Image (tube, rainbow, N blue to C red; front, side, top):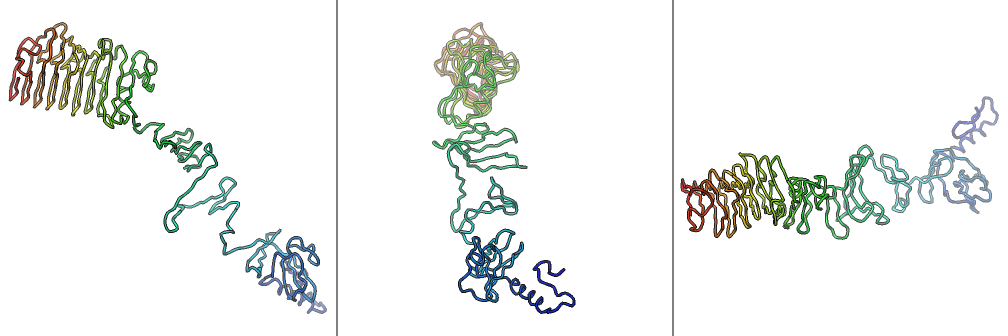
Length: 473
């Protein structure tokens, strides 16, 4: 070997004559390349008055004595130019700009320890602790990413080209999308979730009105006005919306009640319209809370002919707990001796009109800490232990209405029973037909007031009784 492997400096051979020539050539190369610095890397034409010892990196398009020596190091020595080809990884200081450059095998690339703002413009991509790609031009692998203010406020802006494009934040698990929020295909802000396959819109805000909707349900939609749900046991299906009659109706009253209790009524009345037919139930239809947003639930059948809408139960028929409910135009009965047709509790407020009561079990109307008012005509066609049973400070009122009794129904305990601080009021009513059993029973600081109509005013075969502070007026 006659030259060194890296800088190709000549070695002194054994017994070589004029060893100083070889030694001096090696020193010359070291003098040029150790602590390498050049005047410029952008000069393509040799200077007209070069200085001995000047060094340049020959720029592309070299002319004159430099022609054909692009990217080589040109040294001015002894009045001539000497050219040294660079090797990959060499570093040179460019003194005209005080900038380092490194040779990558085809070009000298600036190494900028102090970047300016302009140096970071129009980059092809940035990967921080990971690799960017053509789609993800900014890629960050980190436990957290901090974006903070520069003295006051801070905004993160996600801009899309047109309304039909997407501007969103996508949340993934194992590179599968499970949540997305933003503008997806329109200008309505949406929050979506996914099971890894299908996407569901949980929340959407209309970009023109600001109105919020919940397309996948789960949050109470606010009603803009009075709304009607339909129940049709013959043609309906509980999988329907219930907002249309016939084949668009629900099949059961309980399904309609559940739907109504899931909304925000916005203070509007909500109607459940029962189609003609038999609405048979084996467990009580339960209304166990007031309407959110206020308002009244109207359960309406056929007010012209209540017998065409039959709510018949093998248990209690209808339980109202804490709700405000008006019932009209139905025939209601229970075949369970220990149950009542209509039960009210926990401050429930019940209004009845155009009702036909069939078999009543313990009572046609049973209240515990609840209120009931009859505001329309009533017909009673079959027995019950009591037509009205009031307990725990319940209140009943019927003013100026007509009760028709068909077939002489029997009330074994009393037509009306009030106990434990309850009260019943009958003012100016008419009773058509007859009944058997006691007319009244008032006990434990309760009152039954007929406004002086007498002990024979209410239907029954005998007067009745009072006890423990109960009064009949």
